[in-house]
Image (cartoon, rainbow, N blue to C red; front, top):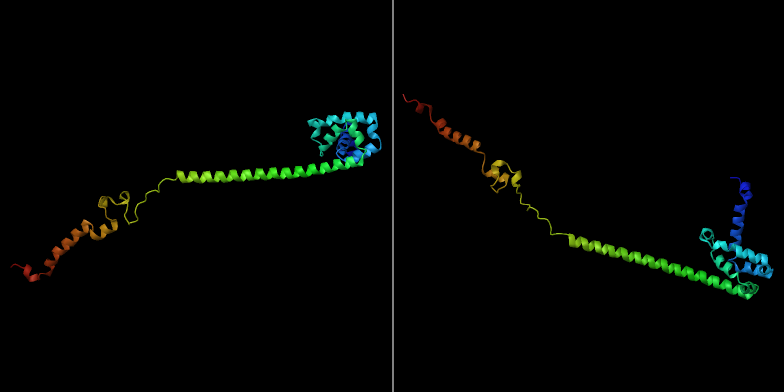
Length: 204
């Protein structure tokens, strides 16, 4: 939008002017300036200050950057306060109170933030302790494992060695298959026949 078109909007311009003026009321030296030039004695200006009280509404107060101006706007409704603003000592006292308020607010806010941070850290430590206790209480006895003796489980052994209780390798070394034993027996029986002289077989 063209800036010239924004200036032509009277409602928006009025809003900006009144917003700036209301926030200027948070400056005690500006109030002293108005009092010394008798603006605060003018009934029209006093009526204008009454009109500006609509800024206390939440729909307008959210636009204020210096909310202390609302407190001064309330005090300006009293004639006694408007007269005291012409006194330089009164203005200096108000300024000192503002500074003390800001310092106290900043210190109080820092303490509040630190206390919240400490509470969060304590909650985190408590949660970690509870989790560790839950892990320790929930852990059961260690799972039983088969002894590492070289034994082959029964379901993994061949059918010929199940129930023997001996390693399969030992069975092969100490008990060769029966087919091999039979062959060696037959060879042993045939050796004496082969060692006999041929003439002994001739019975004639």
